[in-house]
Image (cartoon, rainbow, N blue to C red; front, top):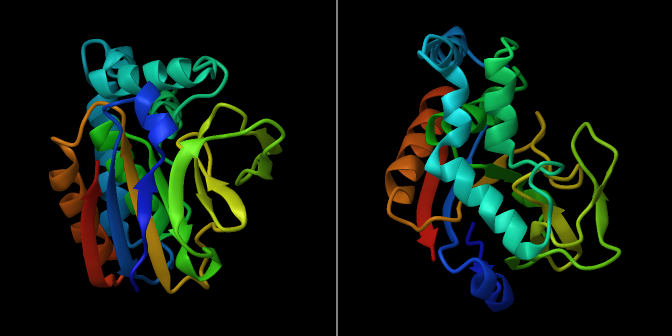
Length: 221
Protein backbone atom coordinates (compact mmCIF):
# COMPACT_ATOMS: atom_id res chain seq x y z
CA UNK A 1 0.00 0.00 0.00
CA UNK A 2 1.46 3.34 -1.06
CA UNK A 3 1.16 6.05 1.56
CA UNK A 4 2.33 9.64 1.17
CA UNK A 5 4.04 11.32 4.12
CA UNK A 6 5.28 14.91 3.87
CA UNK A 7 6.63 17.65 6.15
CA UNK A 8 4.76 20.95 6.32
CA UNK A 9 6.86 23.92 5.22
CA UNK A 10 5.86 26.06 8.22
CA UNK A 11 7.14 23.33 10.58
CA UNK A 12 10.28 22.93 8.50
CA UNK A 13 11.06 26.67 8.85
CA UNK A 14 11.03 26.39 12.65
CA UNK A 15 12.67 22.94 12.74
CA UNK A 16 14.84 22.87 9.58
CA UNK A 17 16.53 19.53 10.27
CA UNK A 18 13.27 17.57 10.58
CA UNK A 19 13.38 14.18 8.85
CA UNK A 20 11.15 11.11 8.93
CA UNK A 21 12.04 7.45 8.46
CA UNK A 22 8.98 5.55 7.25
CA UNK A 23 8.44 1.79 7.35
CA UNK A 24 5.25 0.19 6.01
CA UNK A 25 4.60 -3.51 6.45
CA UNK A 26 1.98 -6.20 6.60
CA UNK A 27 2.04 -7.36 10.22
CA UNK A 28 0.44 -9.56 12.84
CA UNK A 29 0.15 -7.73 16.15
CA UNK A 30 0.22 -10.81 18.37
CA UNK A 31 1.87 -11.36 21.75
CA UNK A 32 5.62 -10.83 21.53
CA UNK A 33 7.69 -14.02 21.38
CA UNK A 34 10.17 -14.61 24.24
CA UNK A 35 13.13 -13.67 22.04
CA UNK A 36 11.77 -10.15 21.50
CA UNK A 37 10.97 -9.75 25.19
CA UNK A 38 14.52 -10.86 25.97
CA UNK A 39 15.89 -8.18 23.63
CA UNK A 40 13.75 -5.55 25.34
CA UNK A 41 14.91 -6.60 28.78
CA UNK A 42 18.55 -6.75 27.70
CA UNK A 43 18.41 -3.20 26.34
CA UNK A 44 16.93 -1.95 29.60
CA UNK A 45 19.59 -3.73 31.64
CA UNK A 46 22.33 -2.19 29.49
CA UNK A 47 21.04 1.29 30.30
CA UNK A 48 20.74 0.57 34.02
CA UNK A 49 24.33 -0.70 34.11
CA UNK A 50 25.73 2.53 32.69
CA UNK A 51 27.89 4.51 35.15
CA UNK A 52 25.33 7.33 34.86
CA UNK A 53 22.07 5.91 33.51
CA UNK A 54 20.31 9.28 33.42
CA UNK A 55 22.92 10.39 30.92
CA UNK A 56 20.80 8.82 28.17
CA UNK A 57 18.31 11.65 28.74
CA UNK A 58 21.01 14.09 27.66
CA UNK A 59 21.66 12.39 24.31
CA UNK A 60 21.74 14.64 21.20
CA UNK A 61 18.55 13.05 19.85
CA UNK A 62 16.58 13.78 23.03
CA UNK A 63 18.00 17.32 23.13
CA UNK A 64 16.97 17.90 19.49
CA UNK A 65 13.40 16.76 20.19
CA UNK A 66 13.16 19.08 23.19
CA UNK A 67 14.56 21.97 21.14
CA UNK A 68 12.01 21.34 18.38
CA UNK A 69 9.14 21.42 20.86
CA UNK A 70 10.44 24.75 22.21
CA UNK A 71 10.77 26.15 18.68
CA UNK A 72 7.14 25.25 17.98
CA UNK A 73 5.97 26.75 21.28
CA UNK A 74 5.41 23.57 23.33
CA UNK A 75 6.95 23.02 26.77
CA UNK A 76 9.14 19.86 26.51
CA UNK A 77 9.02 19.46 30.30
CA UNK A 78 5.23 18.99 30.14
CA UNK A 79 5.03 17.27 26.74
CA UNK A 80 7.86 14.79 26.36
CA UNK A 81 8.82 12.90 23.24
CA UNK A 82 7.94 9.22 23.49
CA UNK A 83 11.60 8.11 23.37
CA UNK A 84 12.37 10.24 26.42
CA UNK A 85 9.29 8.90 28.21
CA UNK A 86 10.35 5.30 27.51
CA UNK A 87 13.90 5.97 28.68
CA UNK A 88 12.63 7.55 31.89
CA UNK A 89 10.53 4.44 32.48
CA UNK A 90 13.58 2.21 31.99
CA UNK A 91 15.71 4.34 34.31
CA UNK A 92 12.99 4.07 36.96
CA UNK A 93 13.36 0.28 36.80
CA UNK A 94 9.94 -0.32 35.22
CA UNK A 95 11.25 -1.78 31.97
CA UNK A 96 9.59 -1.43 28.59
CA UNK A 97 5.84 -2.10 28.43
CA UNK A 98 4.73 -5.31 26.71
CA UNK A 99 1.80 -4.62 24.37
CA UNK A 100 2.11 -6.70 21.19
CA UNK A 101 4.93 -7.65 18.83
CA UNK A 102 4.52 -4.58 16.59
CA UNK A 103 4.34 -2.00 19.39
CA UNK A 104 7.12 -3.74 21.32
CA UNK A 105 9.43 -3.67 18.30
CA UNK A 106 8.73 0.03 17.83
CA UNK A 107 9.48 0.77 21.49
CA UNK A 108 12.71 -1.24 21.35
CA UNK A 109 14.01 0.76 18.38
CA UNK A 110 12.87 4.01 20.01
CA UNK A 111 14.96 3.25 23.11
CA UNK A 112 17.94 2.15 21.00
CA UNK A 113 17.83 5.18 18.68
CA UNK A 114 16.63 7.74 21.31
CA UNK A 115 14.10 8.84 18.65
CA UNK A 116 10.30 8.96 18.98
CA UNK A 117 8.37 6.65 16.65
CA UNK A 118 4.76 6.99 15.53
CA UNK A 119 2.82 3.83 14.72
CA UNK A 120 -0.41 3.71 12.71
CA UNK A 121 -2.93 1.15 11.47
CA UNK A 122 -3.24 2.06 7.79
CA UNK A 123 -6.82 0.78 7.69
CA UNK A 124 -7.75 3.83 9.79
CA UNK A 125 -5.61 6.41 7.99
CA UNK A 126 -7.48 8.50 5.42
CA UNK A 127 -5.50 9.99 2.54
CA UNK A 128 -2.10 11.64 2.66
CA UNK A 129 -0.25 12.30 5.92
CA UNK A 130 1.31 15.68 6.72
CA UNK A 131 3.64 16.37 9.66
CA UNK A 132 2.82 19.86 10.92
CA UNK A 133 2.30 21.93 14.07
CA UNK A 134 -0.98 21.45 15.89
CA UNK A 135 -3.49 24.29 15.69
CA UNK A 136 -5.52 26.03 18.35
CA UNK A 137 -8.41 23.87 19.56
CA UNK A 138 -7.08 20.63 18.06
CA UNK A 139 -7.20 17.60 20.36
CA UNK A 140 -7.50 13.83 20.22
CA UNK A 141 -7.73 11.01 22.70
CA UNK A 142 -4.20 9.70 23.20
CA UNK A 143 -3.56 5.99 23.70
CA UNK A 144 -4.18 5.29 27.37
CA UNK A 145 -4.41 9.02 28.05
CA UNK A 146 -6.92 11.82 28.36
CA UNK A 147 -7.53 14.22 25.49
CA UNK A 148 -4.20 15.64 24.35
CA UNK A 149 -3.87 19.39 23.71
CA UNK A 150 -2.26 19.45 20.27
CA UNK A 151 -1.75 23.19 19.88
CA UNK A 152 1.92 23.81 18.91
CA UNK A 153 2.71 20.08 19.21
CA UNK A 154 4.23 18.43 16.12
CA UNK A 155 1.47 16.18 14.78
CA UNK A 156 0.72 13.76 11.94
CA UNK A 157 -2.52 14.61 10.16
CA UNK A 158 -4.58 12.88 7.50
CA UNK A 159 -7.77 14.08 5.82
CA UNK A 160 -9.72 13.59 9.07
CA UNK A 161 -7.26 15.63 11.13
CA UNK A 162 -4.49 14.91 13.62
CA UNK A 163 -3.92 11.26 14.56
CA UNK A 164 -0.38 11.04 15.94
CA UNK A 165 2.52 12.92 17.48
CA UNK A 166 6.02 12.26 18.85
CA UNK A 167 4.45 12.48 22.35
CA UNK A 168 1.46 10.13 22.03
CA UNK A 169 -0.51 8.68 19.15
CA UNK A 170 -4.30 8.63 18.97
CA UNK A 171 -6.72 5.82 19.64
CA UNK A 172 -8.19 6.30 16.14
CA UNK A 173 -5.18 4.89 14.30
CA UNK A 174 -3.60 2.75 17.04
CA UNK A 175 -2.31 -0.73 16.17
CA UNK A 176 -4.36 -3.59 17.65
CA UNK A 177 -4.54 -7.34 17.12
CA UNK A 178 -6.87 -6.62 14.17
CA UNK A 179 -4.21 -4.59 12.36
CA UNK A 180 -2.98 -6.06 9.09
CA UNK A 181 -0.94 -3.22 7.65
CA UNK A 182 1.01 -0.68 9.69
CA UNK A 183 3.06 2.44 9.15
CA UNK A 184 5.87 3.33 11.56
CA UNK A 185 7.50 6.77 11.35
CA UNK A 186 10.83 7.43 13.09
CA UNK A 187 11.01 11.15 13.88
CA UNK A 188 14.32 13.00 13.84
CA UNK A 189 14.72 16.72 14.45
CA UNK A 190 18.48 16.59 13.87
CA UNK A 191 18.75 15.45 10.27
CA UNK A 192 18.36 12.24 8.27
CA UNK A 193 21.88 10.81 8.61
CA UNK A 194 20.95 8.00 11.04
CA UNK A 195 17.45 7.27 9.80
CA UNK A 196 18.26 4.69 7.11
CA UNK A 197 19.96 2.21 9.49
CA UNK A 198 17.19 2.63 12.06
CA UNK A 199 14.46 2.02 9.47
CA UNK A 200 16.36 -1.12 8.42
CA UNK A 201 16.64 -2.22 12.05
CA UNK A 202 12.91 -1.72 12.54
CA UNK A 203 12.05 -3.55 9.32
CA UNK A 204 14.21 -6.48 10.41
CA UNK A 205 12.48 -6.68 13.81
CA UNK A 206 9.02 -6.54 12.25
CA UNK A 207 9.95 -9.29 9.82
CA UNK A 208 11.42 -11.47 12.55
CA UNK A 209 8.91 -10.96 15.36
CA UNK A 210 5.69 -9.56 13.85
CA UNK A 211 5.53 -11.71 10.69
CA UNK A 212 6.21 -8.61 8.65
CA UNK A 213 5.81 -8.84 4.90
CA UNK A 214 5.84 -6.52 1.87
CA UNK A 215 8.04 -4.11 3.82
CA UNK A 216 8.81 -0.73 2.27
CA UNK A 217 11.24 1.87 3.61
CA UNK A 218 11.66 5.53 2.74
CA UNK A 219 13.22 8.63 4.31
CA UNK A 220 11.46 12.00 4.04
CA UNK A 221 13.52 15.14 4.61
